Length: 237
Image (cartoon, rainbow, N blue to C red; front, side):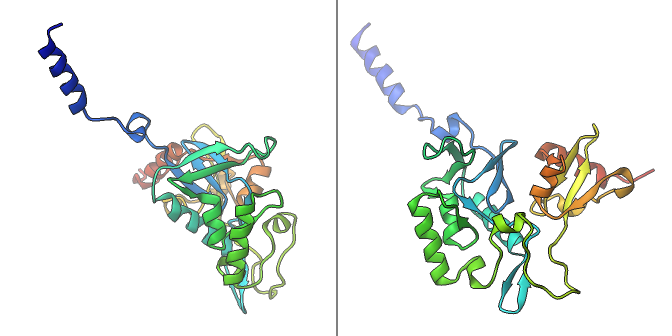
């Protein structure tokens, strides 16, 4: 091959735009389910090493009750808007099905701990326990008042509240898909306000996503949620 063709070929290769990792593999779409769980490309992923309040859980800030579970979910949802999410199994505990998820250099579990919206599990990484300690000392998130540890709340423990106050918010929507599948919708989904529960049809409300899962209902894929929301907007004949 003549030398000038070689020069032209090298110049063309050098001028060609390089594909970034994100362009070669489109970033996964992540949606917050609750404070320690996300839906990544249609699959449910639990953050390794942390436990956040359940969606229906209340905590106390002085004498004021607030929906700490919902706050935690919103905090994770805001984090997920900052970039593409990458998750991988941790080599620390192969038996644990949780995953370490990050956006760039930001570890999502550590970020939730630093914001005070999760507690570190006993087997968690040392950096997680330090993040929890920092949030506790600064009285951030759930550490600004009283709360039941998420694991104890799931076991049935509740804060002492007045009799006329509900102990938890039961607003997880258990719905039936077009195929009759039992699926649920959480209040962090954009379509949540547009879809009503049809109780005569067999749909119902749950107090937490864990309760829905135990009852045999599963997280609804985003595509099906959007179809249901679109159907709800159509005028009835």
